[in-house]
Image (cartoon, rainbow, N blue to C red; front, side):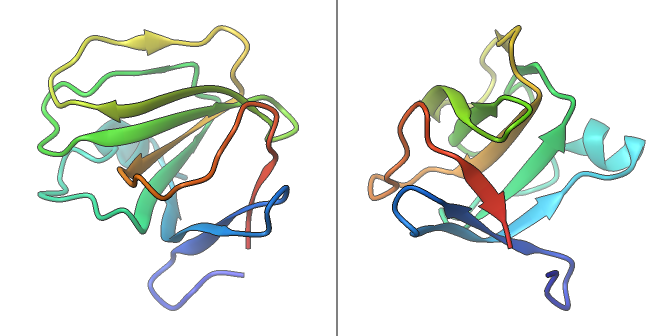
Length: 118
């Protein structure tokens, strides 16, 4: 279910915890290309989900982010936490999707967890 502003809630099925309340799914080529570049600050409760995404870089970003790579079943296969702006590409060959989130020291995500968008 989408909120009025087009965002969705990201939840960890293992814990039932909400990881972020304002996650936008990049559905158009423009949204995919822009990614989080236009955001001055990426709050810990916000992020972007990209399907068919095996690589992420932070060139041009203004915020440190957490990057989560997921397989086709939305199972976490790689985590890159506190990735600083203007860093080279991180590649995950087995990834089907990536989720880019504002950093949070409270986020409980482990490899093998399944993430869902409500």
